[in-house]
Each structure stands twice: as C-alpha cells, then as structure tokens.
Image (cartoon, rainbow, N blue to C red):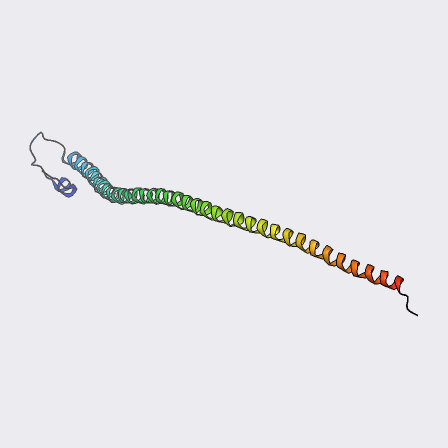
Length: 156
C-alpha cells in the first residue's frame, strides 16, 4: 500500500470523547507528511541518480571493452610488425650475402684476369726486350762494319 504525503496531511480521524488532541494529531501528521515527502523526494532523486550512474557504468564498460579490443588489436599489430620486420631483416641479410658472394666472385674473376694480363704483358715485355736487344745488336754490328770500312778505306 503506497501512501502519498498529501494523504497523510489530509487524513482525518473521528472525534471521540477522551481521544487525542486534534491539534497535536494534526501537527504530528503535518510533520510526518513533510518527513514523508522529503524522504519520497530523496528516494526519487536517488533512483534517478542510480539510473544515471547505471547508464554511465554501461558507457564506461562499453568504453573499457572498446579500449581492451583496441589494445589487443594494437598488440596483434605490433606482433605482426615485429614478425614482418624479422622476416624482412632475414631477407635483407640473405640478399646481402648473395650480393656479397656475387661481388666476391666478380672480384676473384677480375683478379685472375689481371694476373693473366700481367703475365701476358710480362711476356710481351720480355719478347720486346729480346727483339730490341737483337735490333740494337744488329744496328751496333752495322755501325761497327761501317766504322771498320771507314778505317780501312779512308775517303778523301
């Protein structure tokens, strides 16, 4: 049974002989009515506040779930990025190793070509020196012959 403050205020009682003082009863009813009205108002305000807090709690829980999902997604992204970076690093290292091996092989081939060319040039130098010595020897022989002929038959 729900009683409103106004009902308490308007409540009337029968008058009987040797009953309660009507003024005192009315004063008490007024006081009870005011107290009841204040408590009813506080109860309604509290109920409104509870609803507001419950709605805020739902929002906060949704936000918390959203933040958790975002954090989990971020963690997954970081893990994927780490894994991808690791794969990329390994790929770069392998490519560098292959390129280094290729450069090393090319340098070795170039070294061998230079060594062959050096040997060929050394042989050509030796051949040139032998021919030059032979040519100079032949020229010297010719000069000696001219010198000898000139000493043997002087020209006037």
